[in-house]
Image 1 (cartoon, each protein chain N blue to C red):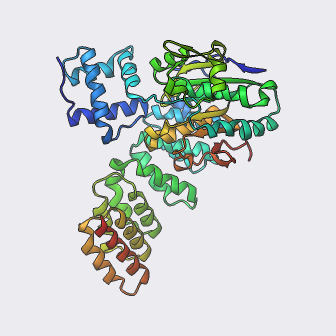
Image 2 (tube, chains in turn purple, yellow):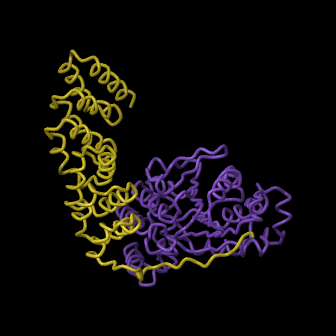
Image 3 (tube, chains in turn purple, red):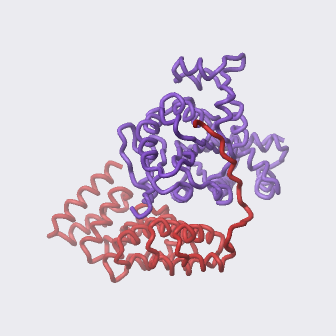
Amino acid sequence: MVISNISDLDFEKFREFFYRKTGIQFEASKRYFVDKRLMERIELTECTSFRQYFTKLRFEASGEELQQLTNLMTVNETYFFREEYQFRCLVESILPELTSRKRDRSPIRIWAIPSSSGEEPYSIALYLLEYWSGINNWDIEIISSDIDTRILAQARAGLYSDRSVQHLPEKLLRKYFRKTEKGYQLDGTLRDAVEFTRVNLSERGDTRAYRGFDVIFCRNLLIYFDDVSRKAAAETFFDAMKPGSYICLGHSESMSRFSSLFKVRKFPEAIVYQRPLEGA
Amino acid sequence: MGLIKSPKPQPTNEDVRRRGRDCDALVAQLEDANPMARRWAARDLTDCPGASAALVGRLSREPDPSVRDVIFTTLTALGDDPAVAGLVECLNSEDAALRNEAIEAMKQLPEKVAPIMRGLLLNPDQDVRIFAVNILESLRHPDVEFWLIGVIESDPDLNVCGTAVDLLGEVGSEASREPLVRLKKRFADQPYIQFAVDLALTRISQN
């Protein structure tokens, strides 16, 4: 049986539930987007009503359907070197400052969330290899996470469309990618350099183990969160970061609007936020 | 040197940490000497419905802003009567940061704050009344305009009324027009109110 529409009441129920589970808030303007995907899943799971599907979503022990739906509801559009000025800031300002302060030789740890299909963490890796001379003196770990398991598999595969790589300099495209019938295949060594993990930022159990990062990239994710979830996310990041470490948000996002925990740093290339040094 | 792979961080749904994570243990950890332990205790208390009183108790003594931040987030998440009472109590604090955080937290609790809003707007302390108007600034509740009209119709204080007028300029409808005109007459010798009301009326017309 095909469901032809989602009632206002059902939409509200779903919206509230999805927000509680993921921290992602859908405004009324996203109604068509949400309804379309809900109806698609209702049909594919062979449920006969919203009510039946909603029960499955809420009480299914494996949580599989909730994950499927989350995959559908999250937006995964990005490309290599998107908001490049922040990567420039990383190699020209953040890392020089960080390494001049660093007292041990432990690896520099970077967390990129959401990973989406991998363009961002791989861009960071590329940028470091190509534009940061410090790479010869320091070890760097890059961990990248996403709530969407399907997109994580895509990220690990490292296969990209023309559109994804359109902003990459030709030199880098030739050096790190192989053109195949299916698209641009990223070099295996680079793919192996990034650890991809599934994380729901709103789930304390998921994020608890994420500690000791020197730099976090969290761009264009918090715009989907409401005030309370944004504040909770800021607190999660605070605990995931070492004192004195840095977090980069998307160009339209400002940490100061929802958290006073971080110091605003105006570097020549970009504004980033810093967890204050201990005792500072 | 170069890019290296790190061990994958493991999700920890079952808590295997050094100290207990039951509600009593978490409440006790709010007094821990280490701010990180206090922060995590405050965060995990989200799962303890009876924890608001303990969190409120800690709030006024908590010296670390990052812990305080988490306590506010948890109180907002719990959103029960003791949590709201604790937030209201913060409005009387001399600590401006604490007051502002309480105002931000209360804005997130429209259903809980609505029943006490009238009381806040009638509080004998004019500062508390101004803070109550500040809460209304982004309280998602259908009665916001009604409450603001109540303020400008009856509050004797110039600054409280002025704050309400500013907000009515943003959220007011035709229903605010007459009360605003009456306020202008009530404070006929106050240029600030004359100016603020005219501005609010213009904005309402534009809307």
